[in-house]
Length: 498
Image (cartoon, rainbow, N blue to C red; front, top):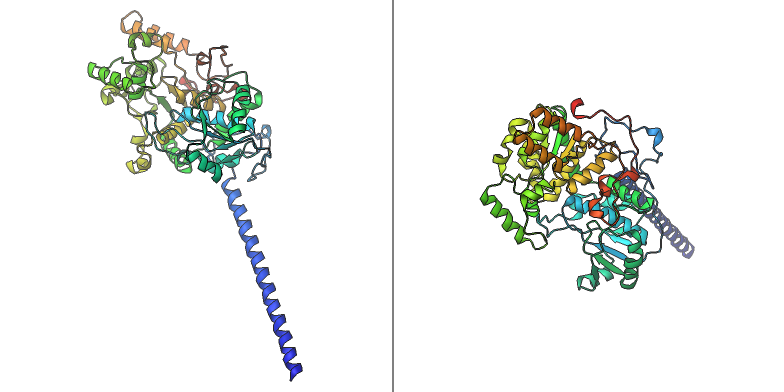
């Protein structure tokens, strides 16, 4: 009886051990499966991430879109598909916070600079904060415009980027214990090594509260320039919502043939800031002047509009633009997409251009109101949509050389020197005045416009360098020549060959 009980007890222990072993085995298998699926999901989501130092090979601005302009694959280093770049291991010298200022494209260039600076200081970058206090008052966060996970992961082989500070440091910043400063404009990378890095090492966290044009255009090491390009052309990808809507707009345009994007920078903020009032009535001039005085950071208040126009510092008016497009022999059957906000003066000022080019379209006319509902009161997201369409256009024509004009110009160069007509405004307003006064005939006027712009169509060229006068030299992001390969076999996208 005792022996039987003893045998039964031993059997029970073996059963319990067997059950425990099976439970542990099941837990191991479940944990392994979860880890494997997590890896697969991450790799799938980040399948388009570039491998280390790969810069060339994107013929289209859209991440997953096939392009009619193919890249010769044997000239591009092969990178295994769906592989994350390896993390760069380095001793972290501290944390860099940045607050961008300005519109979308000014901030875009600044983000490229700040990533590059963080990389070469061996610090950790916190995802940049976007401007919410400028004229546009756009409340968008970084992740509302850019694919933040792609941004972080695609640059992990260069620099560590976090969405926020570690908790202890975050609490210090929240109570105001942070060293904040604007870096000096147009500085060499050596300035950041010698002046900013010691501050980061001392305070652990430094906040740069101005970011526009804070890194010099020229004289930087080649690896600096190439990283600026990599961030701009690869890491800064718009959200899927913006990209998908951009694809839809381009598809709608392509269904009706070739299209030109006209960046008509004739908006209220530009006119108030620049003091350009050509064609405005007295009430409009007063309104623009009041607005200029309302913004204290717009330093220039008393402006001679006529003189500024003659010097080429004013955006072309819609009426002047219509005249120039005709002189350039732009066929009036082409679609012209207006990449801009609300044109100042509305239909009254657009009448001449609309009469000359009846196929004027905007995102608001191509899409349903419901499509753009999410973007209302988010000017930077609207600008992102225009940016994508501008990259894909047959010809891009900006009427003013602002930040969007410059950054799009450089991106189109990267995409194969796609044609961008860079208007020489100082010359053009003089020719327009001569034509309007009867000094020049139409044929003389048209010939002069075409001849003067033959070499201003986005062809390969060297940046103009002006030592000690960086504002007057060519902007790096308008012509990032260190990242470009001259193309002599690109499609003929000349005006007459559209």
